[in-house]
Image (tube, rainbow, N blue to C red; front, side):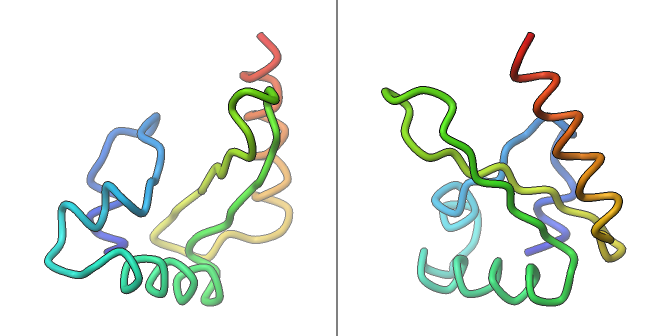
Length: 85
């Protein structure tokens, strides 16, 4: 699953529903796989309410190497800057 995620363009957002469509696995399996990748440190998720109409948004950062806390914080800051523009 990580390979499928990393093959996409950098600006592609990771949606479990989209990954389930691309794989033979169901949505529950994809969500479990994302949890495993997150637990292993290859996926980090930032949750934010951007507007009330949009609700809670999940921004997933994915890498082929583990994402440290420092790198994750920089990615979140960069995302916040992009969202505020």
